[in-house]
Length: 372
Image (cartoon, rainbow, N blue to C red):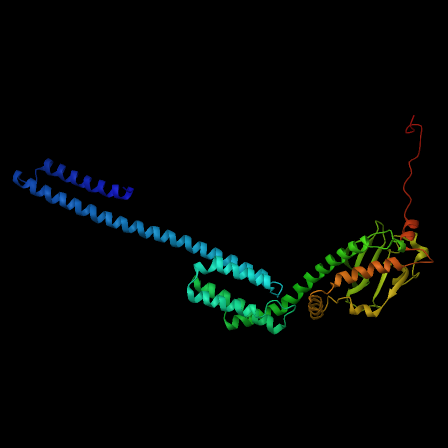
């Protein structure tokens, strides 16, 4: 028997015993009336016990149902949240591949449908079908992106309605969200593209170093690309060997205008006078550069301008075409080629760096430290 049933019977018996004790103690009835009164009390106890058991049973079922509903709601909410998080991760780059769409469909089939009403499931599948019509393209137009985002909002509304949250992304809210995104997202895309470009340049430098032609005679390594402002503009720099020389290309962010686009070896004038005889000039900004510099305005066709988010978006679309080489790989290969071809009076940059490297400090031999 369940504990609650035992408790109900116990209370009924306790009430009956209490009735008998009062009846005997206070002699409330005549002797001939006692059996009748006892039978009535017993019947009342039985009825009370039955009613109590029925109430407790109903309460138990209600509590079990409530507990089950709470657990189902918690699990349902968790799965919906996980699905929406996955959906936003997919849509974060404003591109949906067929593989990503297939993963979303599997998640809906496995985790969402069993917790969702049939009419809302139909709405979800309709929204995903709308996304599928635009998925897989190398680059989406702004109109296509707006359509996909509309389907994403529809999915959010459907799941919100399913769990009765009451929230909804209305037409006015969609307009405001799209407007806000139009102001913020281009800068976030530019930030992501800047880092991706550095990663691709680093990869290209490593690959080019592995494939370098030994006849070129380049023995120094190019590594660790980074951005830094110089003379009012931002350039992309890479370390050269382990010394003070750097190789710069740019500008990649034009802030105050520039003398032109160039590639050149840089060694700061005042801190590294050992390169004095190899300076490009004795005054002006070119005094910080060594020997020959490559000036080429055509580099604007290769180098991005991070000041213009629209141009960055165009670069991203251009290099999103399957089979195309990334911009970072092109820039990295250009830097390596310049380093291999650079010469000053018939000498390569590695020879110049080795000549100007500060001599290692020698240890003075004294009777105290002389080996026996």
